[in-house]
Image 1: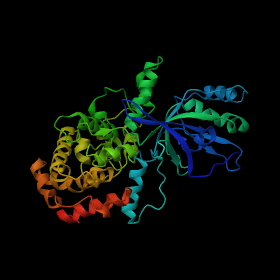
Image 2: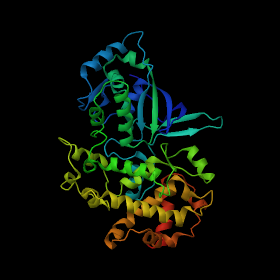
Image 3: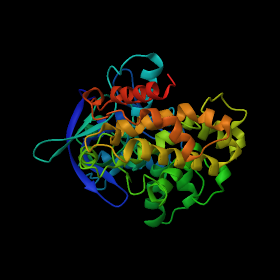
Image 4: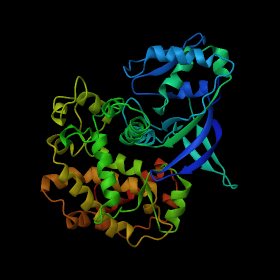
Amino acid sequence: MSHFEFPYETHALRVEQRLGTFYVVVLPAELLLQVAASDRMRAKMNEDGSGYTLEGTQRLIQDKRLNEIGDYINRVDSAFPNSIIVAANYDLETGLDQGELEYISSEEDGKPIDASHVWTISESDDGCHKLTIPSSEKLAAVIDGQHRLFSFARADAAAMQDMNLLCSVFIDLPKALQAQIFATINSTQKRVDRSLTYELFGYNVSDEDEEYWTPDKLAVFFTRKLATDTASPLQGRITVAPKRDAALEELAEKAKWRVSTAVIVDGILRLFSSNPKRDANLMRKDEASPRSALTDGAKDRSPLRDVFIEGNDALIYKMVLNYLKASEDVFWKNAREDSFILRTIGVQAIFDILRKIAAEAMDKKDIRVEYFGGVLEGAREIDFAADRFRNPSGSGRTEIRRAIEKAIGIL
C-alpha cells in the first residue's frame, strides 16, 4: 500500500460561481480515501497495511454497487472523469468547523494551537493556488461521489495506486449547505426522491416545519437572512468562501469587506449549540423529532439554548440583528481600511462577545440596539489596526476579544 507524507500539497484551480468559491484539484484515490468520509461511512486502513475496511452503515449506499464499481476500477481502461465533491474542514464527530473546534479547544486549555489540521488554500505571486492538507485526519466530508470513492476500498491495491481523482473542494462549507448542494445535484439531474437526498445529511425535505430544524440548519437560515436583509449591517457582505481567503482579505483592505458564511454560521450556532452533530443525531434518532427532543439530551450551556428549544427564532434573530447594528456603529462604521475588526478574526471576536453577553441581555429582557451599544461603547476607541492584532490565526481573534472584554469590563 502506498503512503503519503503530510502536509500534502497540490495545485488548485479557483472557481467562482453564484453559490460561492470552490477549488478543483487532482488527488490520488488512496489519499482521498484516507482523508475523506461521510457521516455514516468511512474507510479505515487495515493495521497490516493490506487494504481498507469500510466502517459505518449507510442505507443509501448500495453494497452491490460498491463491488461493481470496484470491479470496474480493476480494469485497465477504467476512468472517472466526473469530480468528487467534498467539503473540507468539517469535523464529523461534533459537526463544527475544524478551525472553530481548534479555537474552542485552545481557549479551554489556555494553550495556543500547536499544529492546526485545517485545510488551507494559498495564492502564489503568479496567481496560482495551492491546497495544503496538513494531516490524514478525516476532515473532508463527501458531498457527492460516495460510491465512486468508497469503491476503491473494494478494488485491487495496484489499481488504487494508479488512479488519480478529480475533486471539487469547498473549504469551510457548513453542513446545511452541503445538504443543499447534494440535494440539488441528485434531484435535478436524475430521478431521486428529494427527501432521501436530504436524509443522507440528516435533514428532512427543504420545506420542513421550523420546529424540526436542527441547530445548524437554523444558523444557516439566519446567515442567509443577514446577507439579504436590508436592515442588516452584513447585507451583501457574506459569501461562501474559505475563512482564510486572500480575496476576502483584499476586499477588507479596500474597505469593501466581506466575511465567510462559515464565520457567521459558527458565531450564531454557538449561541444555542455546543455540539450540533450530537443535537442533529438526537433529533433524527428514529424519526424526525421537534426541538423539544433536546430537553432530555446532554447538558448544553449555550446562552440561548432554551430559546432555541422553545422555538422562539424571532427572538434569536432580533438579538443577533440588533447586536450587529450596535457593532456597526461602535466597530465597523468608522474603522480604518486596514483595521482587523473588518477581517475574519475581528468578526469572529465580535460574535465571541455576543456569546458572553447574551445571557445577561436575556435576564434583563433587553435586546435593543441601544442596550448593546451601551455595553460595547467602552471599546469604541480601540485601534484594531494596531500590530498586536495582526496575527490572522486564532491568537489574533483572542487578542481582539480580550481587548474588547477589558474595555467593556467583562473580563
